[in-house]
Amino acid sequence: MSAPASAELHTSSATGELVLEVEGLTTGYGRTVVVRDLSLSVPAGGVTAVLGPNGAGKTTLLRAVCGLLPVSKGRVRLFGEDVTKVAPFQRFARGLCHVPEGRGIFRGLTVRENLKLQAGGRDESRAIELAASAFPILRDRLGQTAGTLSGGQQQMLAMASAYVRNPRLVLVDEASLGLAPIVVDEIFAFLAGLPERGSSILLVDQFAPRALAIASTAYVMRRGEIAFSGTGKELLEGDLFSQYVQGSGSDTT
Ligand code: ATP
Image 1 (cartoon, rainbow, N blue to C red):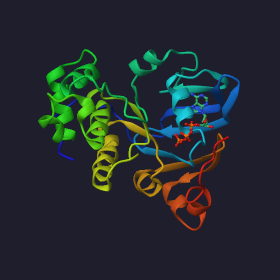
Image 2 (image 1 turned 45 degrees about the vertical axis):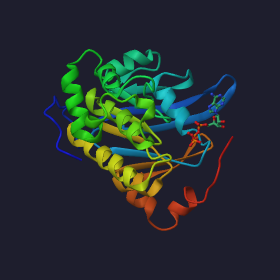
Image 3 (image 1 turned 180 degrees about the horizontal axis):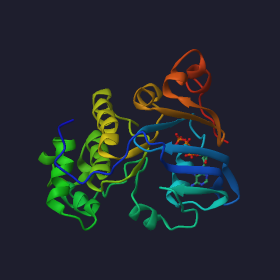
Image 4 (image 1 turned 30 degrees about the vertical axis):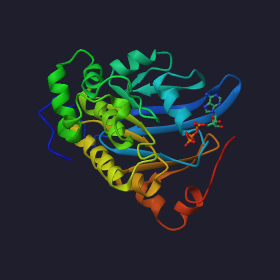
């Protein structure tokens, strides 16, 4: 990753500050409960990984943190404030950024237009400069319709929002899905560098070894609940990794 253009940085370090606290969260779709009594926290200034088989409820958890799903029990605290009943746009305004599975870009707009939207009223040329400093290929594609980019370039464009908006917490859902290993390397190098700029990361990914390599804290979800929590190193050691993640297959509830 190239050196970023200068930007306002959030202060964050190993201060013990928690940017996200989820307590006893129960949520789902209609009457279907997908996440049950789940608690986790994300410290400031690092990468936290949530791993788990297909259908474990990882995406559902992130949606509830954004406020896109109703919480039937429990609460969500963001940057020290209870936001359980706060609308999604207000959570984003407080410094939350969500890079959803499937990329969350406007496929019919050009790269430049996507970046202008991501800038959300901030200096647009600075936003483009920041995105291009993170992923130089985007500079060559500014006039191209986003839907015609390669999968990797689309993911880079989606990731660029984590730079352009200068968020305090970035939720990343399946960043590596369907991408070539060389592109995955670039995406994870970008993610690993975000904490230095003051953005904490909550990363959901099936590519567990890669996620654990950059994660200071790791959780494993199974059937909507936390089955393990510890350091990334602990999860990689012994048979914990194979027990909880590798070869665990689908976990559709
Ligand atoms: P994956 O890696 O496959 O995305 P996940 O761990 O992110 O898995 P979720 O996508 O949160 O899991 O899905 C958890 C459960 O919720 C699954 O049983 C799924 O079928 C169900 N589910 C997901 N989206 C909906 C929806 N819109 N309506 C009803 N059920 C849903």
